[in-house]
Length: 139
Length: 491
Image 1 (spheres, rainbow over the protein chains, first blue to last red):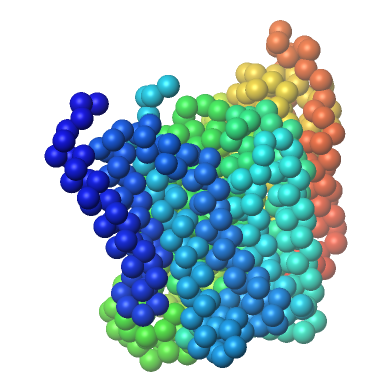
Image 2: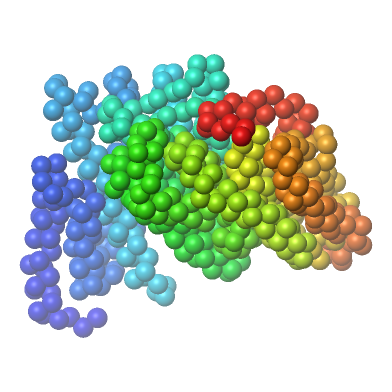
């Protein structure tokens, strides 16, 4: 791919901002608009921009496909695992109240972990989809 | 612990699915899936036992009280269907090992089992939940994973048939969701019990009627009720053998359960009785029995023959709903159970033939019945059950269906049920003729009996066909109880 100076500079400037915004949406999701799904999509957009500008191989060096597969599974496990922990603590599945010292602290921690799981899985799956389509026809 | 069984039934396969996806290649993914399905079958039988002895189970997810939170609400109806789904999964998995190793590329096997577990999660979730929006979510989980499973078939047509199912299935799910949205706009609730209380007050609104229509069409698409069945024959024909066995025995059954719930628990009875919905069910049932059975007779591919026969069998269940009587719904539920057993056994036997010769067109299987006597025996008994010969499970369901029709003096329906059995004699006969009475082809001479790993699960289902044809305490007893819970009475 022919390097394009403007694209390279602008995207190098934008990518950190996109990732920071993704993290903001992720961790502010329990107080304001946002949450794991949106954050995951925004995060993957940063990597996809990188892949578009610097090429697929460079992007796969940052996050290889087998890592993505593990991350996609890990996110779901984190979500379901929070439910198992609440079960083991004697409450109903996904009843976060028992996770903290007070009910509010528990609910807060629970939703944070669950949304983190959603975010990781969504970001990983979006990238898997992108790599699958963009990688078609390559050997 | 005991309270958590209903939840674990859904949560265990859900947790196992991502674990299996990252396991190394080899037989470990299969082994984990096997253990999970056995656990699910155990949980499902404990749950049915608990419901039959203790009554209702209600589980509040996240500790939020219904109708605001999601509630798993289990009575005899869903415990019965959950047991069918989990039981079939547990019988299918031992069968899966060899068949999957042959049909699926090695690097995809962990993902294949992961998708199987997700499909199981979705189907079990639909049966467990008492929240209609939650039904939609689980419906999508099971559907999306089954599209992926079907597309893994060896022929290239598997991709187009999976795509066709994807489009039809998504239209169905969307219609269901639109309907749910419409009734939510009028009642402000998604909990099934709460909807049942609130819907009669607003039943005269056009919005609710429209919502009812959307939901019915949506589920009918998933159920493959004639004339919305077009996705089914392709999907069943080109899917890998194991997937065909599992989906044919469970997916449409769960859709039928949702249909029963919506008609009898959620909406007031007046919707089924007044809006000509009853007649529609009976007409659709009659049409699918006759048309799909005739189609089945002319099929060249054995899997496609059985798929069309499935469409016909769905017609019997629709007819049972259409009678809107306790006997009719009992018959539909019994047939739901028995049809899982017969189609499970038949598709497994056909899968064993595919395992040996790699194809299942009529001309490929000539004379194979003599080389594969056990497989052939399974097809004969499964076929007899499909026809409804006394002493097999199929007889019991047809018996109750005819009884329901006689109760209402619906002579045309009685004639159609009997005529449908005659058509089944023709297509099962055609299968048996090809397998036993035609001369063996050149390539068929070296064929030997299928391995025990495929035969044993097949024969478990074959024996179940005979057992439930003789001892009807479980099927009829539970189905009658379930019909009573759904609140249908003989008019």
